[in-house]
Length: 346
Image (tube, rainbow, N blue to C red; front, side):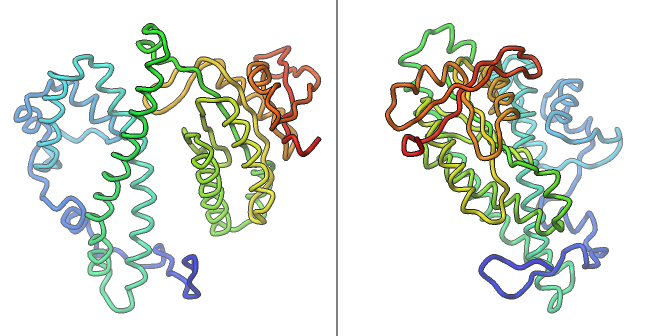
């Protein structure tokens, strides 16, 4: 049994409910809203897609291939396929680019869908005593249009914010860098210390609550510090900022905030600055690798920075930087690093 934050009444465990009467047809009715009526060949022909490419795009979206005669596609699938055809002709002529876009969208939305189904199952399970499982599932599905509208709103807000940053960045950069998708960024990793050991001592519910709290705390501190969360993977968050001082302030803010969170282990954090390949919502390159290595070498409750970060921060009165011994870590036999603290910690 799990308790909803702020509520004393525990929520039922969705896995304890007999959902056998909620079959695939019922789920289609509740979620897709339209029947499955087309085979793969019928869909491809009606949408004007290349059969081989349509299969690659479908797999890039994270779905398995259907059997040739199976009627598993809906009119919504047909409209989406026609949209892909239009986009291919007008905006994305490169096949590789289309598949990369499909993968990026799928990776983001599949994680979101996993979380939302778990949440909706809890909502449905909370009403099992008064409704049948199918009726309870229908009740939970009624919030899907609101979730869809909220997702669209949040996406547009992020789109506007990202567009503003992009335009501002373009105005002070070389055309070659813009074409190559390379940007000068500060990259940070924050890692929970002893995560594996901690998971052995906590129940699944406690572990889930810890992960949720870690995500809430890191997102709040990073957003308030003018940073962007690139991704959270289990016990680690990857973030970027445009300015080294912002990354340094975020790192110290994360360290200090987690100290006050009894449910969270201490952090170790690594920061690096330089040119980064930013593509499809992720970041790549030497700077990302250096930040990751610094994180793995940092002691609990400390922040390490590379030479480029040190050069950018050394004259900033808000920070204190202390050279540490040269690091010998995987891929870097002589990695120079500095320990970062706030000026008041001198």
